[in-house]
Amino acid sequence: MSNVKSFPMPAGSYRRVGMATSGLLLLLTAIPGKPAAAQGLSLNVEPAAAIWVDKPQGDRFTTGFYGAIRPNLALGSVFSLQLSYALLYTPAGKEWSEAGTAHLLGGGVRIRPLAPWQDEEDQLGGLFVDANANYVRTGPLDRFGYDVGLGYNFQLASWMALGPVLRYSQLIQPDSLIDNNPADAQFISLGLNFAFGPAAKEVEAAECPKATAAECPPQAAPPKKEKEAKAPGNTCPDKDSDGVCNAYDRCPDESGPPNTLGCPIDPCGGRPLSVLVQFDFDSAGMPIAQEGRIQTMDPVLDAVAKAIEQDPSCRVCIIGYASVEGATDYNLDLSHRRADAVQGYMTARGLASKRLPTTGMGDTCQLVPWDTRPMNRRVEFDRLEEGESCPTQCEQ
Image: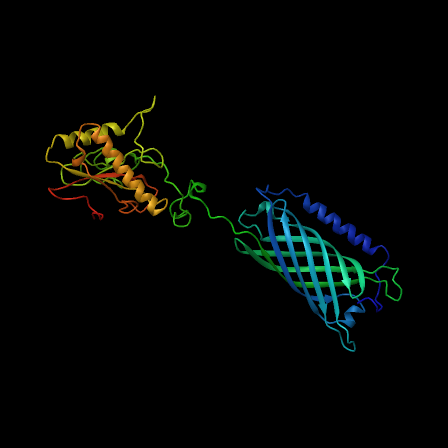
């Protein structure tokens, strides 16, 4: 590429270009970026068309191909270090027979000046500028070169971005080479930049404390364990004035405590009685009395036990439930353990265990579609007739 004459640039032009490029990079790196939680690796692949902008290269070679691979190490949201390998191939022009080929190996920096104002999920997108210093091999000649690129990536997925890039490259021609033109070779390339990075982590439910079920669905990122929740309070219309909102009240025409979803404590009346037992967080442990802590479950469960004791013919199945957070098998086991824990509470108050068989329904039989609601974490007392066993299906 260098054994033909070209028109040299005026003296000092290359020095001014280099100083201007360095000044631009220093200015951009001064822009504050968001702190990076960890250094991240990404890869940029750049296929492009190469066009010579000097003579006689512009006459000797036609539009060719420029391709580059650049792995990046992010030191923050703005600044990255990168390695660079590029291949330049330009076919011979009219009246010439030899094509031009160059290998460019080097490294430099990549800067995303708009990153401080972009979303963190947009880790590969936005405006970027980069500069590389290169060792260049053209035929038998070793040279120094540099390139500066400007582009804009559009984030297509959490792990991929794509956008246009314009690059200016210059191959420095040493003045000491005999029989070679001392002018530098210059070309521009216009192509696409493919950026690849690590896929973003799915959002955990714990990271969406203010999200509704629609904004942070458990199907997309189910937490491993259940969350603590309190029984619904009187924060909306309450027809029977029992402290349970109409939307949650299973007995809107009868008064009952919040822990039984507004139903009277009548486990032997034939209608299943749901009780929101305040289990310890993500376990089947019964509430433990603590100094300064009012135990609201003891009066409710004591009233249930007393009602069963007063009716010798009453035999009830204790059914445990769990909400849908967590694995299905785990929730099934948890529901059985919760039913057993309540049975133990009742037998400790004098009831025979044979009057209180237990089972678990896991995360089936959800009372409400919002699986983070406390109504889906409960036990039910279901009266059994003579010879009848615990149910195996949800009652509509």
